[in-house]
Length: 275
Ligand code: C2E
Ligand code: CA
Ligand code: CA
Ligand code: CA
Image (tube, rainbow, N blue to C red; front, side, top):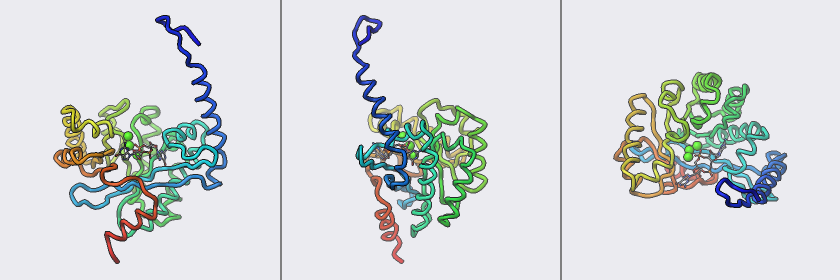
């Protein structure tokens, strides 16, 4: 226990120890997890608001540890970034995601989340090209999602990596737009084809007029800069309605479809376009 400034006693130490211990154990369990096939991907459709078609699917990583059960990506990805395992794991995600998307009877793109650690790795382009070649997926059908907080850490390296990806025809999405240390200069500084509007704004759409104004402004700005917009975390018909009115290009969220296994997405596409 420790005295805080106001004389309260905070019993934080045992809790801290538990957190550190769980982190250590998860890190240890992650060693060899890739080789033991403990990871798999789910795919969440992203719908075009004008056509209603599936424009894209986002690949979302899952880890089923024999020891810990299902561990949320929000918990294990930061650990993998710290111990460097995100590089081989992220490479596996790219290969797997491209392989799955190459089997779709659709031109829908596959959206893959990129860790900042991967973005700063010199072999990123080689990994991406190898995933495309192994699967036969055209580069145009791959989009890589990057969160904006990352870019500021190393502007030159981020810019070089994104430019290289664009040169080989891979698309890039600025994820979670509007959160973090966002600066509008990002939009002119970095080459993105798509802006993904963060769930925090979408959540607020029904009750907070300020969020409507923000989403509207983001959509208009993106359009002027030649970028597409996707709204994430759409959970209610009222939110969907509002996004339609603001002329957002595409939507993603539990209201429309939850993340699903590869075979279910495959069936969605097959059902949509009977051969
Ligand atoms: P994200 O990139 O913002 O992904 C969207 C998250 O929102 C996913 O959580 C998704 O399941 C969830 N989601 C989708 N629709 C809704 C909705 O309507 N309501 C709510 N409340 N949530 C919704 P998930 O799968 O737990 O992933 C969490 C984060 O983990 C992702 O956030 C992403 O940052 C990271 N992540 C997931 N897969 C990968 C990966 O392969 N590589 C890397 N580097 N990061 C990943
Ligand atoms: Ca994402
Ligand atoms: Ca996101
Ligand atoms: Ca988000």
